[in-house]
Image (cartoon, rainbow, N blue to C red; front, side, top):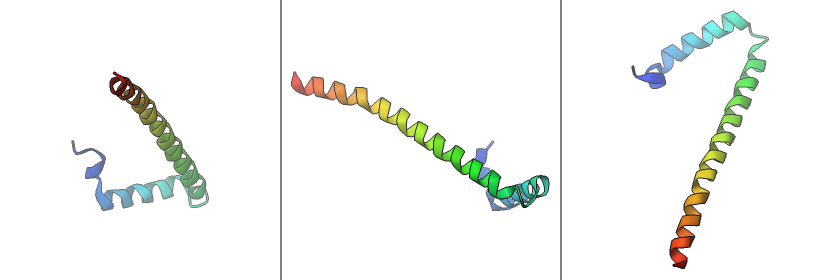
Length: 67
């Protein structure tokens, strides 16, 4: 139950070969672009959530400093 870290380099190579066989070489750039956009959107969303969590903490700190 090691999670994703337990896949390793040989496992990633096998996965890439299977993807290449299933989708073919012409579709790989399109798939890669879609995956990249998905990760970028996910990163942007998580950053927004983290920023939202930090704002209330800053307001609390300002209130305690003013007291």
